[in-house]
Image 1 (cartoon, helix red, strand yellow):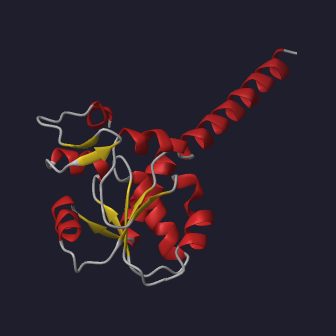
Image 2 (cartoon, helix red, strand yellow):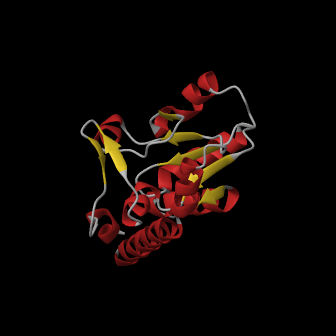
Length: 169
């Protein structure tokens, strides 16, 4: 009887250990997301804030500025450009293809910090768009560089910008 109990205990310890080992080997959702974002950033083209500022000021530079943040974020403040639109990241693939038929059109995508923008840029590139860029660091970098933002109050700049978002990661 004692041998049977010992055998059952040893077997259950082995099973528990195997289950824990398989859980440790499997990446967490956070790790998977970070891997996807890293892969997206390697697969796409990026543009920095000073270059985007030049594009905006250059009347000859034709491009679409696509904000992929949520509507409440867009209302709080956005980058102003001659041609722009806002489509939340979750709807980009469905809505963008209906609105932009030119696969060669220059498009600069941005979000708050560059993550959603990178994923959206990768998705549109995979769908056949050939001239897609993601704004490095997103709106946070744009503001930190001293560039203006617009909302329903008008244009403004944030001096001595220090974001809590940057401190989280």
